[in-house]
Length: 83
Image 1 (spheres, rainbow, N blue to C red):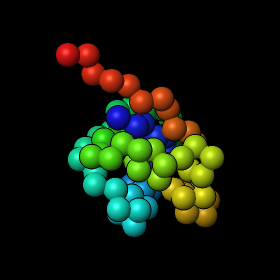
Image 2: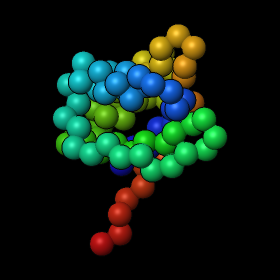
Image 3: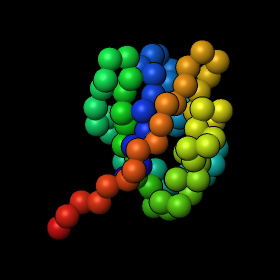
Image 4: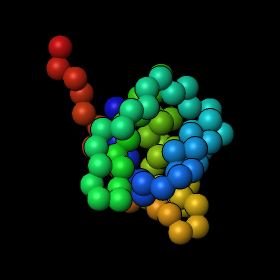
C-alpha cells in the first residue's frame, strides 16, 4: 500500500484519481487512513505496485497530484500486512 498526504479540500481526490487513471494504474483499493488538521492521508493499492509508486513518485508528487494552490505533501513508506 502506498500512502499519500493531501490537502483536505473539494476536488483533491478527483485530481489524484484522474492522474492514476491517465497513467493506466489498475487501482484496487483507495481508503482514507488518517487526518492531521487540514491534511488527509489516503492509502492506495494497485495490481502493479511499481506503476502506482512511479505515478505517485515523491520527487514529482506536487506537480502531478496538485492543482494550483494545493499540494501533495509527501508519500509515506508503504507497509505490509502481516499474515
